[in-house]
Length: 240
Image 1 (cartoon, rainbow, N blue to C red):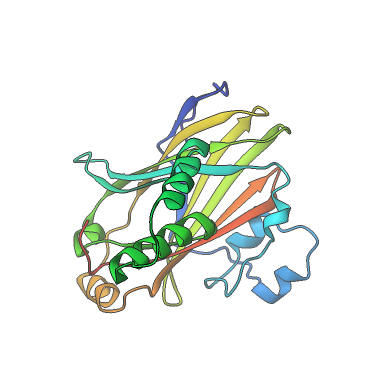
Image 2: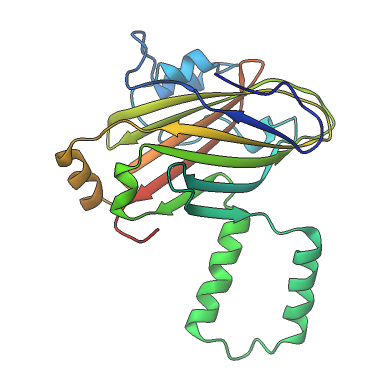
């Protein structure tokens, strides 16, 4: 795994060789057993055999005030941007609020109401993301995910993410990325490189025919203690 040791404000790290596996650990554990533990470790989640039914920690467990502010996915071979989202700045939120006060909201078309609802959902559902890609996504070999995040007043040691992807009850691949150390009150940017496994034609057809049955758990650890848990699901019947 390659990563820069530069942890200054706005530093850019690149992790090009994540630890990954198509298989689970030989020792298994259930989600119910994990919920009885005071501390959930990386080894614990690597032993899970299926997608979790609910979050394994609360938002309050993120005592380091780590907040993801930008996220971009690109095809590493063509540099095509596949998905991009950013948290609105305080100025943008204020400007949007001022515009709302000056606009007549009495007559809103269904399309406008849908856009407002989608915007609210995007801002509030910070622990869950729903993706819709085209079927071409399933034949990509390498995808880069650029993440920008901020850190609160406390130093963050051994910041690590484990992301496990499933189709129905089958584990497709487990990715393991190390962010390293982050200084307090810093803004950090890194790009994780996902090397996707080659999927059989039959599995690709099943994943296309069953939208949002492909799901992932993203677990975030500091000093090997779970502090954040995000979820996502995926469909492959749309456009890039």
